[in-house]
Image 1: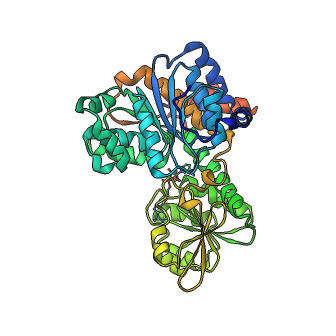
Image 2: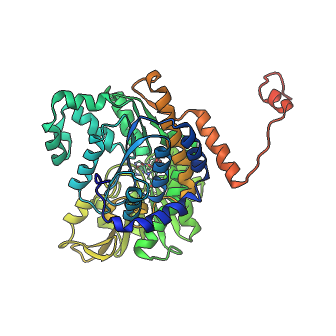
Image 3: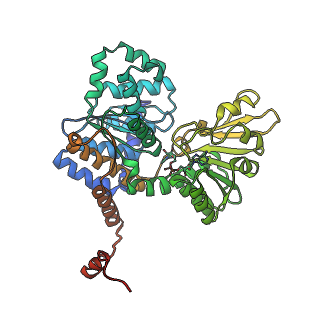
Length: 443
Ligand SMILES: NC(=O)c1ccc[n+]([C@@H]2O[C@H](COP(=O)([O-])OP(=O)(O)OC[C@H]3O[C@@H](n4cnc5c(N)ncnc54)[C@H](O)[C@@H]3O)[C@@H](O)[C@H]2O)c1
């Protein structure tokens, strides 16, 4: 196979071993793979996947491949690629990958272009970069594209650009931020095919966002800094699914946790969960470690940096690298930052304080650690695989909207996961079923 772009094919054997290690923790996806192997529900379909290139994603790719899909995988973040996994996918599983850890923006979009040149029938996104590129190209809105991608798009004939989109029967989206972008597209009437919001499945966000992000974000911060969490003041911005998981785990490691929020309900929940809640500007004065998980813009801004203590550590685990206003920090710093450890850029402010930004403000759990543990991605990617199958079977009946994962799929994944964990639960008796469905029973 020659059509791929990865760092080093020699790393394939190590990647294969790690992919198989993750596979042991992914029994639900494994059982889907066995079925896909026999039934080939994706036969004849070209899939372009724009996901974090990790061991868990590799197991999803193997599942879709066994299902008969013709796949191309590209990264959904310049820093999240595991180069040995990319090598193994190409060399051991014959799946073309376009992803190199640390690639610059031009290369990142050159890889998105490769996914578009695959002429997909279906897309899988994590953050909607692939789908939004496809739509901007179709609409001829080249100014919204990264310049080199725009140059390529301009070389296409009008009907080629339109056909690229017409080929697509539907897509899936993995994360909160991507779903928000897609719902905005639906609202503006520019969404041109149905998309299943995998993130909206309960077996996704209740577990992946909470337990997966909670654990792997701490892992990323610790691997990058080797800082002791016990006794530190840890500021979590955002108390959504990811923020709850992160706050809970930071407390479990002995940190004093402060939560910042903009939603009164979430703030109340954080307060009643026993966390201190305050505005970021107040938290900035006392925090030792900061982590944003909001999906929002400039959550830590210039005035917050002005208030921070010497030695503050600042990270982000929300989807895009816009939650921390790094340009504002640059403007108040002397010279360039020093890379004092891998993934730690140390800025010196004009008044002499050192502020440490982790992973260039990108998803820290994927930049300096390995992303979510396989056991939780088992459920997220079971949703991806079954949603792809559902789309293949039902796309012609769906409208150009964002759909939730069908409840049957969600429940089935929960059932399979419990079974794999060896957890048994009670079953409603006929008497209980009748009682719960009756309005006549009472005191
Ligand atoms: N690191 C990962 O691997 C990973 C995994 C899943 C999701 N994500 C990303 O994490 C982000 C959060 O996801 P989620 O599922 O927790 O979303 P969510 O919608 O459940 O929570 C986001 C929270 O942030 C709050 N918020 C918004 N602006 C804020 C601000 N200025 N200050 C403080 N709080 C603010 C919102 O009120 C909300 O409660 C998204 O970008 C999502 O794509 C990352």
